[in-house]
Image (tube, rainbow, N blue to C red; front, top):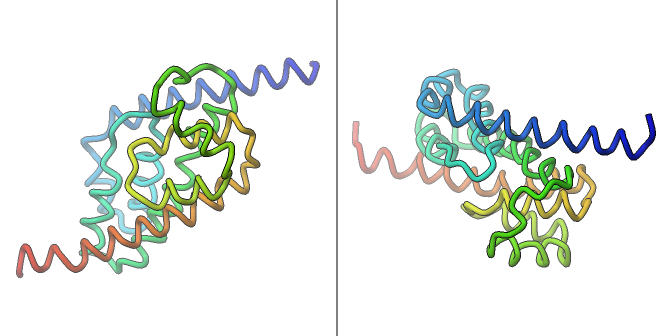
Length: 180
């Protein structure tokens, strides 16, 4: 098999995996709290799955916020940040696949040059804040062929920061809102 055919096959497999993961996660979104009851591995799984969807809403940060009050917030942040970064590989793979998934969206047109110009700094900044368009940044990173290790590291650090803020906010505020 030629290198070009292998690359085409890999791209098609990537796009099919992304579609399959997105459909699966969307179908189990109502069971998110049950999975989170498994502690840190459950939080990791919820974060992984909610970040693996492409442009579909998933309850990841709400679970991090709530579980920050149940478990140690730093452990929640580590589990959620790691799962979130790995889940974001789906967007990266969608971009890497080279298939035109969303190239005609205005927000994508604005994010792409930023990711191409600033690379992992853009990924880090976009991952560190609640951002419904981060999937587009992951796709842009895949299209720009940012090395996967660099993408994952920048995404992981950003996801850790975001998850830490949400977990500690949940730990502090839920006891204040719902005194026991």
